[in-house]
Image (tube, rainbow, N blue to C red; front, top):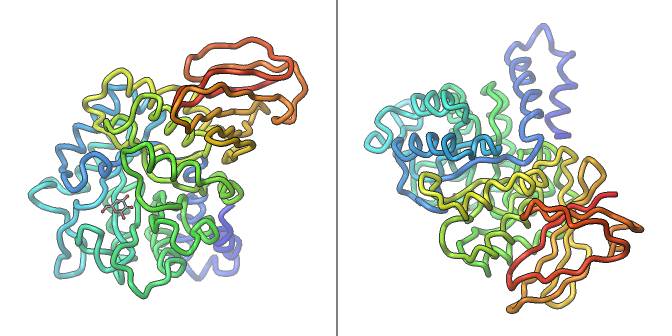
Length: 388
Ligand code: GAL
C-alpha cells in the first residue's frame, strides 16, 4: 500500500464538509492506489524512435498494438517519450509540437482510447527535458491538470536539468499535483536510481527507474537486469522497480539474448514497455514479446519480485514465487558457451516429486524427483514453472 496516499485518504473525514477540493484530491488519490496493481505493460517510443515522434507514428502504433495481438497479450499503454512538446503558451500551458502533432494530444488520446488502449506522455521534473524541451519545474500542477484534461493515463517524469533539486521532494510535488488534477494517471519516476528511489518511490509513484539507460546490447541489458537482486523487498502491487524499457526486437541482440531480457524482466516483475517498431514485427519478436506464459509470470497477482537463489561463475538461478504457490525459475547462462545447469528442488524448498514446465516451449517436462539438468545456450535462459 502506498503509505502517503493512504494518509491522505484516512485524513478525509476531518474535512469532509469543508474542503471540496481536498475531497476531490482524495478521491483521485484513492483511485491512484488502484493503479498498476501488476507491473504496467505497453509500448514507449524512445528506444526505437528517439525524438522522431509524431501523431502519425502514435496512431499507426496504436493500430498495430491491436492488430498484432499486443493489446490482447496485455500491453495497454502507448507512451510518447521525449520531444512531443515545444514551448509554453502565454498562460504557461505546455504546447505540443504543432508540426508533428497537428491535431493535439487530446485528439490523440481520444483515438488511442477508441482502440481500447491508454495514452502516456513524458515530461521532466527539472527545467528542461533531456532533449531540451520545456520541463515541468514550477508548472507541476498546471501540467498535471493539462494531462488530466487531455485524457492522459500515464506520465513518465525524467530528471535531466534538475541541478540543485532533491528528487524525493520534486517527485512528491508531482505526485500531489497528479492527485489534485483528479484523473488516475500512472506515475513513472525516471531519475535513474539517484538517491535510491526504491526507498521513497513506493510512497511517491507507481514505478521508479533503478539505473541509467538500457541500450540494445546484451552487455548493457544484462548488467542492468542481473544487478536488480536485493531490490525485491521494495516492489509490490502499485509500486514497482523499473530496470528500464524493453529492447526486444530492435536488432542488437540475438534471439537467446532477447529471451534472457524478457525472462529476466518477467522474473523481476518489471514493467514491460516494448520499445520496438510494433508496426513491423517479425514472428520471432512476436513470439518473445507475446509469450503468454512468460507474461503471466510478470503479471502474477501475488506481485512479488524475484531474486537470485544461486550463482556459480557465469551461471545464475533466479526464482519468483507465484500466487498459486508454484515458482517461476530462470536458469541463466551468462557465459560464452553452452553449459549444463542443474536445478535442485531443495534450493526451492521442495522435496520431490515436482512438476516442471518449459515456459518458452509451452511444454510439460514431466515429474522430477530431486533435480533437473538442462543445457542452456550461451547468453540464454531456460525458463520454468515448478509446482507440486
Ligand atoms: C532519459 C531516460 C530515457 C529517455 C530519454 C529521453 O533520461 O532515461 O528513458 O526518456 O531520457 O530524452
